[in-house]
Amino acid sequence: MTGYFPHPPKKSEAVILLHGIWMKGFCLYPLANRLRAQGYRTVCFSYRSLRDSLNETLVHLHRCIENLEAEAIHFVGHSLGGLLIQQLLERYPEQRPGGVVALGTPFAGSIVARQLYSHQPGRYLLGQIIEEGLLIESAPPWEFTQKLGIIAGVRGLGIGQLIARLPQPNDGTVGVIETKLSGMTDHCLVRTNHTGLLFSPAVAQLTGTFLRYHHFTP
Image (cartoon, rainbow, N blue to C red):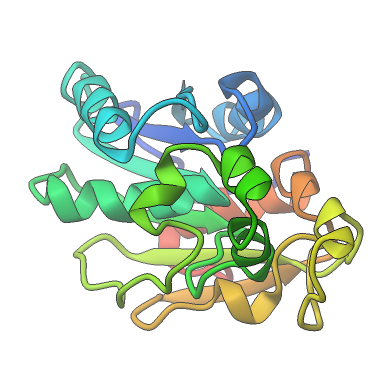
């Protein structure tokens, strides 16, 4: 059940969804389907998180946006996807109006990623994009016209707990404190783990609400 929205999105509004590391575009389908049920056009952008450089990924994403017919374009990024959105807006600031929702994105840097990066096999698992400092270093403050809403999970079940000691609370991969960023508009918590952010009906509901009202509570 998607809930009632007194101001449904215009048909000219689109949402581009970006997955996280070790994932593919089809992982975004459940969330995209729920956003379409709320009236949005959706595009699941798939990229090779281990093989492609940051520059290659941003160029492909920018071309995807240029070919999209829409008056407003929103972005939803899961984990690394949220950092890629910030990089996109930094490099290509002339974007159409829209909002941004980040799901479990470690804007403050990921303890798990840092632990993996400290060993050569771990660096291989993190791929090319990690060489740009994403996931390792803290992101700069959010200073774009697009409003940023952040959703963090608080169900600490995930492979990240086997790699590093996570701050409490966490989603099993990313600590809540790691998701916060100076300049964000709103922040909320959902009882799910890191991967579950993509499959949670509550997350989809909150995402649609933020894209309409720029807050998770309209």
